[in-house]
Length: 262
Ligand SMILES: Nc1nc2c(ncn2[C@@H]2O[C@H](COP(=O)(O)OP(=O)(O)OP(=O)(O)O)[C@@H](O)[C@H]2O)c(=O)[nH]1
Ligand SMILES: [Mg+2]
Image 1 (cartoon, rainbow, N blue to C red):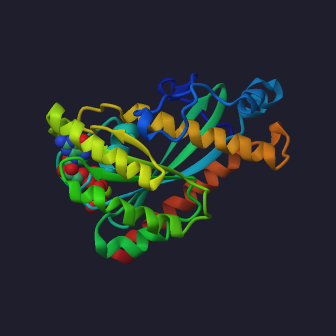
Image 2 (image 1 turned 90 degrees about the vertical axis):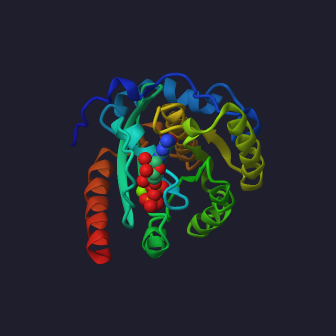
Image 3 (image 1 turned 30 degrees about the horizontal axis):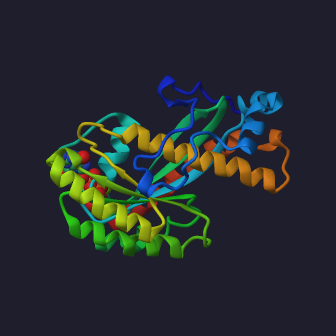
C-alpha cells in the first residue's frame, strides 16, 4: 500500500470556501452540506482517509495568451513568468489537499489556446469534473470566446456532470473602474454559461488560492455525495493507488503529445 506524504499546511481547507461574487456563484451556501458533514464526521472514513485519496479532474481552457499557465503556476508553484511561453498541447499538475480532515487530489490540466494544438488538447477534456474557462480582462474578445471553449469542453463530457468556472485574469493591469466594468460583463457571461465567476491576478496572486480552494471544495463535496448516492460505504471513498497510476500515465501522455507536436 502506498503512503502519501502529508499534505502541505497551505493546502488544508477546514471551512467551506466562499464564492467571489454572489451574483455569479454556483452554490450560495456557506457551509458543507449536511450529508457531506456526515461523511466527514465518520471516524472510520477519517482513518481510511489517511492512506486513501480521492481525485478529480479540472481542465483549463481559453484563448492563447490569456494566462492559463500562469494561473496554474501561481497556485501550484507560487511562481509568475512575465515572458509568454505557449503551452504545447497539454500539461498537468496534481495538487493534494486536506478537506475537513480528508485527503483529496485535484488533477489540473493546462491546455493550449493556440489553434494548431486545439485537437490535441481537446482529447483531454473527457472525464472533467471541473471546466475552467479563462479570459484576459484586458481583452474583451477573449471573454466572448469563452462560450465556444466551454461548448467544446462540454461536448466531451456527460451533460450536467461538470462545475463550470469563468476566470478573468490580469486584473492587476486594470484601473478599479475598468475592473468593475469588465466584471459586470463577465457576470452576465457567467449567467449564460451557468458558471461561477472569479477575477484574479497571477502576477500579484490576488484571489488565486481562494479560487482553487473553491474548485477543490466543490469538486470534493460532489465526489463524496456521488459516492454516497451510489451506495458505497464511506470507507470505500477513493483509492490511494489511483494517484500514482494517474500521475505516471498522465506524464507519459504529455510526453507523447510533445513528441508528436514538435
Ligand atoms: N500582468 C499580468 N500578466 C499576466 C497575468 N497572467 C498572465 N500574464 C501574462 O500573459 C502572458 C500569457 O500567459 P500564459 O499563462 O502563458 O498564457 P496561456 O493562456 O497559457 O497561453 P497558451 O499556453 O498559448 O494557451 C504571459 O506573458 C504572462 O506573463 C496576470 O495576472 N497579470
Ligand atoms: Mg499556456
